[in-house]
Structure formats: structure tokens, C-alpha cells
Image (cartoon, rainbow, N blue to C red; front, side, top):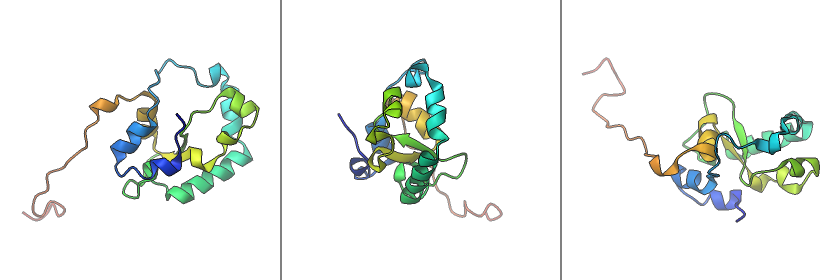
Amino acid sequence: MTKSYHELIFLPTFNERLKYLATKQRVSDLTFNGNRYLNQALYNSHEWKKIRRRVIIRDLGCDLALPDYPITSGKILIHHINPITAEDVLNHTEKVFDMDNLVCVSFDTHQLIHYGVMDKLEPVVTERKPNDTCPWKE
């Protein structure tokens, strides 16, 4: 199944987008078949830095391109919606730099996409009280 940014953005909630992108990998799975030099060469290239800027601008620097989820701590990561391989990098295939295959994510979201347990995700709901935004008021 090929996934896309254009499908992703029609999912209204963070959890729906997270489940759509889940790869169900294990931490021990090797990326790029252990050829990490390819990973570093790609992400340090001028072409990657250019496309990265375009994705951040398009997504407004928001996690999973959701306007209510700005990435404010840590570096903004660019996630390949359909994972790429060492062969994709070596052969310079289209999906490496395809805007429809890229989305902004935070580090924590990226970890959840690759290794998280999606069925244990619960939305955080904070009970609101009068004056809770003004701690000096009672």
C-alpha cells in the first residue's frame, strides 16, 4: 500500500494520522541495511536541505502537518511517509525527494511512527478550572 501526504492531511486527528503512518518496526531493525553512510550523505546534501525547507514551510513547522501541533522543542524532522531504502538513495529515486512522501514530525512522533504501540495511545485531557491560567487568582 502506498501512502501519501495528500491522503494524510484528510485525516482530522493526530492519532488517526499517527496510525496511518505507523511502520511497526522493531528498534533492532537496520535502517538502510546498515549502510548509515548513505543516510548521512543524503541528509547532509544540498538537495535534501532545500526540500526540507520546503516541507517545513508547507507544514508550517507543525507535527504531522496539524496546525494545532507546532514543533517548538527540538529539531523538526522530515519523515518519509513511504520508507526509503539504500537502493532508493543510490539510484536517486523519485520518492526520496517527493513532497507527497514527506511530512514534518517531532522526534517523539517519529519514534512513535517507527516503534510505538499505537493501541496504547490515549489523548491527554486536562480538566479545566476557573482561573487555572492565572495561578495567583483563587
